[in-house]
Length: 408
Image (cartoon, rainbow, N blue to C red; front, side, top):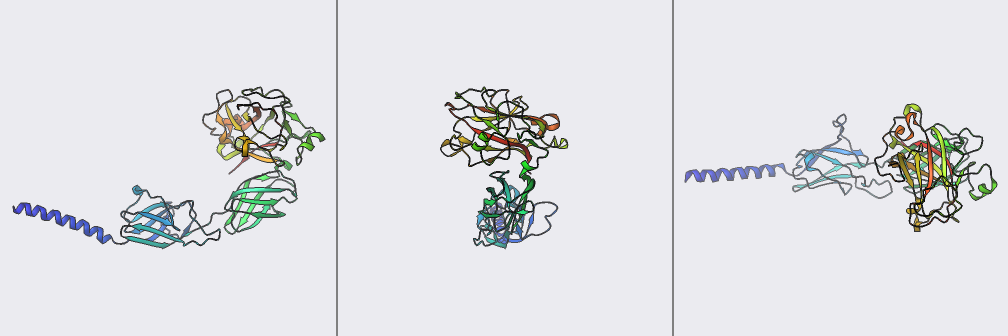
């Protein structure tokens, strides 16, 4: 009997000890916040950008329930946490106050034993330019610059030349193009930093490596294979139909209807045939394809909108890789047209391994040379193909300034 009483007493004492340990842990507290980066983790910080991975050091973190940055809950991975350390990412959606709203600038850790608060600021990210409505708009024209984090801007410039005027929202800048003498980067400056594009505006005025075709008669960058579509060759008739052009261009304008499944792109003015040229400097042939994009300008008059079919794009005529451009599929009411000329951006990662026919569902290319071939010197075909369910009764679109651009 004594042995039974002794065993019961030991169980009670152990339970009491465990309860006391939990009770002794007490309320949580935060002593330091640092980056997870092993080279910087010893340095405490009080401000970071959204998306940063942090190590929160303190105590009482057993059974942590929630972590908040400016009242936005962060995801918690119990496998990364201990009673004295938490590995937590700052949510990308955490408010910063850059838009004028009031934020508490507080980090909170919530456990069953209480709430720890720590003064901590989430910084506004710098502005980031993604694209423009027309990379080659003339002086005096209005363009839209799309991007993110356009807060408290102080300047928008084209190289060293300030925009004639501009207005902006968080994701778009409407700017008037100044007089420019060559190709220049776009620069956006604000209270939280600046961004300079890796690609250039007004590049048609100063082509360089990667600029494949401007289709101008007599230009060393004409880049046309002399067949497939209609070359304007200084024709006032075509110029008047596509105002705002930077010179000659190619028109895809078949004279008869194209039935579903008709892939005879080589006839009846259904293709833009771009001659082979360097996509990048030879030293960059092995560069990641994901860092680059195909860009060109397009003009589709509202009088003959694009409602059916797709432009299939293949390098070197071998159909080993293919990209598909079909803007009418995402346009309001399935009808696509432009107000003058508009820049199209197709990431090279959007190309997919093909089957030798008009479909591609394989893996994207790894390097530039995967697409362009050895030495990154290749051609391009942009071909009108009816992969829809109805006839293409009319199609009239102009293409210009085909180029490969570094987007990083």
